Amino acid sequence: MATVANDSVTPKEHAHLKGVGLVLLAGVFWSTAGIIVRLIESANEWQIVFYRSLALVLTLLVVLVARNGRAIFSAFR
Image (cartoon, rainbow, N blue to C red; front, side, top):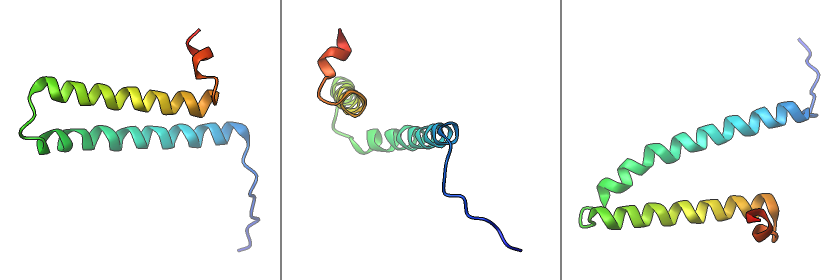
């Protein structure tokens, strides 16, 4: 059976694949967060909240830079 290779992906298919990938990545991050928190035995609640918040801020900065380039400050305005 002969199949035709079609390497072109429509923008709609690209957006769908990107969405699926992001959902899978979010699942991996959510699943590993509990394991990481359990490994930190000596940290108190405030330290865990601090580092989770710091990770969130860094992640949001990476997303803003990826979407807006160096114009991240204009994204806040």
